[in-house]
Image 1 (tube, rainbow, N blue to C red):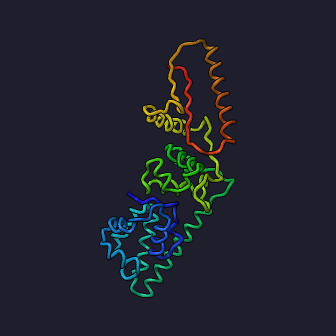
Image 2 (cartoon, rainbow, N blue to C red; image 1 turned 60 degrees about the horizontal axis):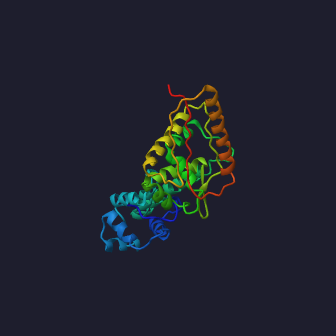
Image 3 (cartoon, rainbow, N blue to C red; image 1 turned 180 degrees about the horizontal axis):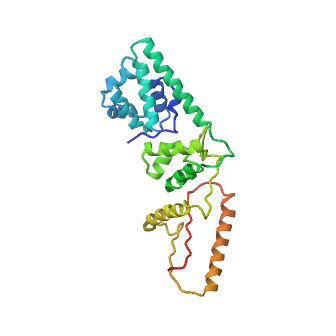
Length: 276
């Protein structure tokens, strides 16, 4: 189980894997026992791990992969960690220089990707397909607006997500501008997303959140949550009146939500349709 860190520390800021690991531990909300858990994850003795941290030894590449998994790194980050270990282990100046050039190229590639998003561009069709493929993308993005959920570890704990999976989601949200990394943590980014009623993705978007609503039904809080299902018969004229009432409710909800401070994450699902 990955330890909780105070935020998503970018490994690309480092060209020394020991410096990265020390910084990663330093950002942990609970530092006690972390080295022991890294030792266990890497399958190395605590004494050996101490020698590694002090520069007397290095991780093997197999141990490096296990450490990356423990830290919750995605595939690209794990590959970069292996590159850093190879750089430290290089036995000749020429080999070390080769790895150094690869490190600089990876850092440059990552920086270009991080600055690719602008405030005005629209999400591509592929990005929209990814964002609306699962409710979790929207949930993570919205949680970053709430105090206490500006860190990857806090979001992972709230939603019960594997850290490696969450890091993939955050990487996408940061790349597209749907989230932003600020000095004190993650926040919703400047990029906006909207799905039109005519979009082929709209049914997936509605379905994702309705499935989540059904999962929630058995444990709804009676004071703060509500589920209402009522098959009924009525006149065609009155059916239009109720449809108008619901549309008015949506508009009034938007007017309340817009200026409201972000404290809780809720989802409203309204279903009003003729059963055929």
